[in-house]
Length: 86
Image (tube, rainbow, N blue to C red):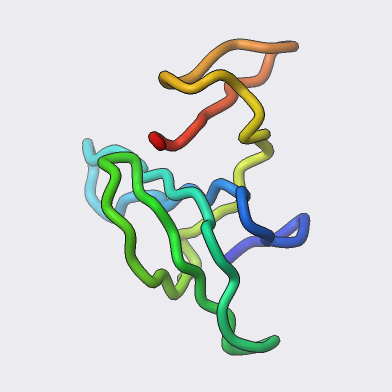
């Protein structure tokens, strides 16, 4: 996973698809599990289900804030902000 910032509870991770035409998936980190080098995360996906996620090279930390209003995405200062469903 490409990291430019620390992954903490509330961080949004984007998983890019391996197939042409497929959409990326967004997950909000609920809990950081494991130690350095063995990180995994309990996440909530956009459809509401939760799972334990072991990030691969296709996972990217999104530069977003979870403080945006619920109900999807909004435009702010030229950047798309996403909020994973609650």
